[in-house]
Image (tube, rainbow, N blue to C red; front, side, top):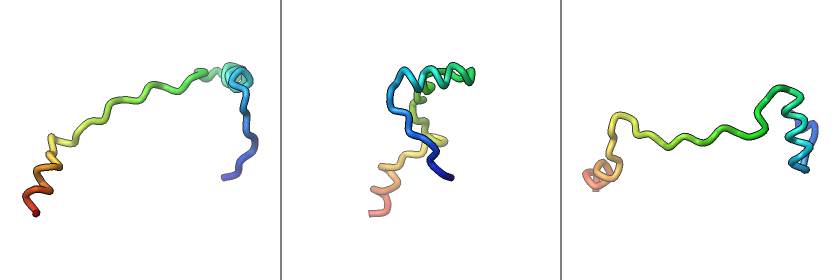
Length: 48
């Protein structure tokens, strides 16, 4: 992978993304979700 260009002005970035039919902003981040209700703190206390 190579860096081809660095685009700094936000208006230039927005124009390029709109020309490519892409959203001008990144999607919002989702909240972290636990995997099956794992209680990490309890697991570490049990080991000590």
